[in-house]
Length: 330
Image (cartoon, rainbow, N blue to C red; front, top):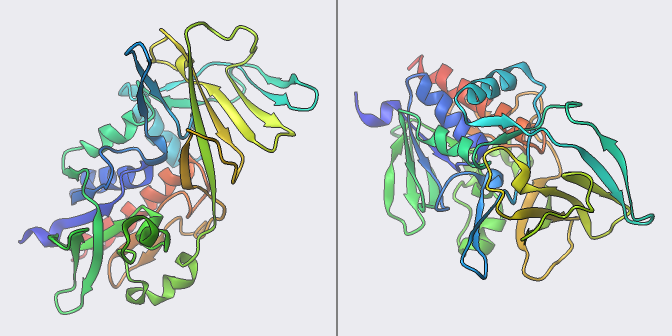
């Protein structure tokens, strides 16, 4: 049996792609994961900065935490928790009213479980990408995904046109694989030509997204005037929420570090920006992923289910289930 028969290519190592790759590997499918960034995480990435004094500062500049209600997602999270990858973040949350300049709607610890990766949000994706059976290739962007009709295989090429191998199935967990935004970033057409999957074109051509900015701040002393460690903003056209990153389990507390996210479309100088940070629509709530059985192509991500970590997890599980099932029949 040649390698292509058992191998699946997963593009993108955010939580959806990482969950999918890990789940496939645990079901006996060999996976090669391609990621253009230096490491995994996507929205669950961790930002590394250096202070003026040379001190290393780490920020979860994407998703600050996540919650789960679905039983399948909860079972997976409990497994991560028992393995030390996840812990509950037990702090109080609230809101800040920009008009009254008052903190309101205080939420007591324990009202809803808020989970974080330990020691960083990206720790979960790192562990999943190291799962036996998963070969992770970072700093390796995919330039083209081509269906070879004669061979019934997928050919994957890099940004430079070099062949990265042939695969029995493909999972695209990065919406930029089909987005026109890819052309703006890479100067080339999106890797996946939607003429291969015309029935998915309408759903994938223009997924609405909400861009945002992330501002990362570090203080030598605690901000004692703030009574909560995470809060949303009311009546603000600039800011949407803030959280104290250094209060999470497993984080260094030598400095107090805060992350603030802007409202959609607001520009802040020297802030980290995601052009397509949060999907504004869910395109496959029922199936939880987009699936072409004939070509063994799955497209997964939070944009399929719901714009949060749990939605991404569920979509990755659904994509893995589709591929594992059909590959077992070949």
